[in-house]
Length: 613
Image (cartoon, rainbow, N blue to C red; front, side, top):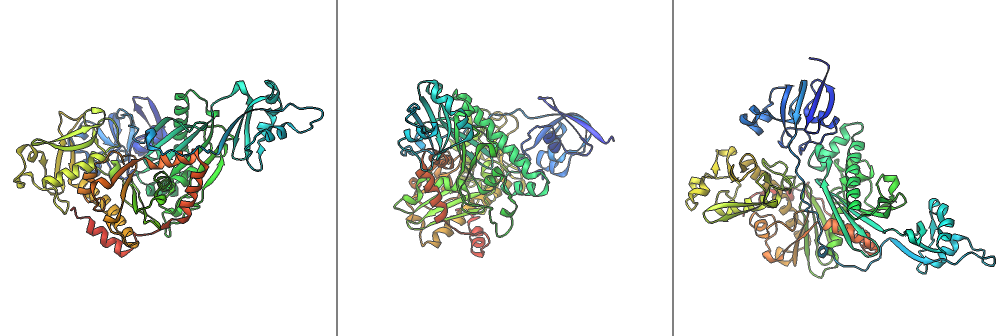
């Protein structure tokens, strides 16, 4: 066996020369090829499937046999993280599928606020210089601005072009100020758009919202996968990667920054504008994503007492962060609340005006890290829970993100089960909203009992033969076929007994956390005016399914309201209004963060809510 081997990744033709014994997952990273994976290379999620078409690789590992099965392995399918290169090899990657922009924000989903951005555009005629008026060019410009910000200054770059710009068109100029600093002065005929971007850095997905700062209009949304998912589906995996590799934090930051810059370029090009027209960015994300984006040490977020480097809002210039926009523009990162309650939760609270409501309201952001905020009418309590990535498709046998072919609805149709897939494509897997429905439907049919056991279809006397025939396997290997081979793009799509356990763990963590917050402020579920469901699929889940599986407190179905990507909406609001930015700071300062998971009471509640109602 030679010291180095070469692997070629098709269809792109990317190659990597690596030491023999390197696994395909690591080799792909060196080749600049992204392979999906949510377990950080531990061989437990089964997402990093590739097809070895030729060459020398290691024998299948036990994890591969268990997750893939002999038929797939015989056809060349392998798990990249478990397959070592023993010689030169050729590997074919699965065909890429475009992500559905479930982080898109309809115009009506972002509440209307008076326009008061930090970036202001002034179209003015500046008095010409005269012998009897010895004011400098900048003094004349500053005094022409009737609503002049306090302590107005200008960048050196702006001052260098100021004299020429003022005299180009008889003193008619377009002036752009970021905060109290003039960053751009140009002749009126060269006037360009004045834009901003709101950026939502999710653990799994990224979204960029391009906004016209002169009108407040949301112009374009660009969204994609967070490339850090190749290092693990959850924030703990990312932190472990940063800790265990000398350049781990740099790699994580470079990956997400490159992806965000690509989305900004995409949005700007679609709007027919230029990167230099983007003068401000507002950023939301959980505390780990916030720290990685800023290049802050994330290590201690995962070590007791889980203290972040900072929870305060951060403002800095775009060029210092490497964000591709006007280099003199400003980047504003919303404040965080605690180690696992981040700027995304602050964004949700701002978007929903949670603390401005008269009645108690609960907001739940369902994601890999469940973040919960409760407004009692007087107090704002927040907490987080390790819901795990199940609701985002990870750790689920056929789980996937919301993309074409994902099962997003499951229902009873006559004497059989039926599914709906995104874009009506052949079924490729099941996403979060589909998991909710599948669990609720199988509970209602008796195919899942209260302890979460899948039962034999033949033991449910009320089932039709068609539905009973969808159940296969025994004990921990039992599964229910949701979409058969004719409905799917490849193999039948199933929900397994192990999937149900993952769902139980996730829903129990969220439910136990919400119930304990209610107890702390002396409220009962019926006291809640509304339960707001935030997150990328907040508008897509069926409230009846969420209640049936016991995910949420027992409130009337009509009180459950999906508010979609409220974190992104909060980022937009703080982009177009300095007053909403102040509100975000106030929210972070007044929130009472409650650590629950170390409490014995929480452990008891967690066990209690593992049971399905």
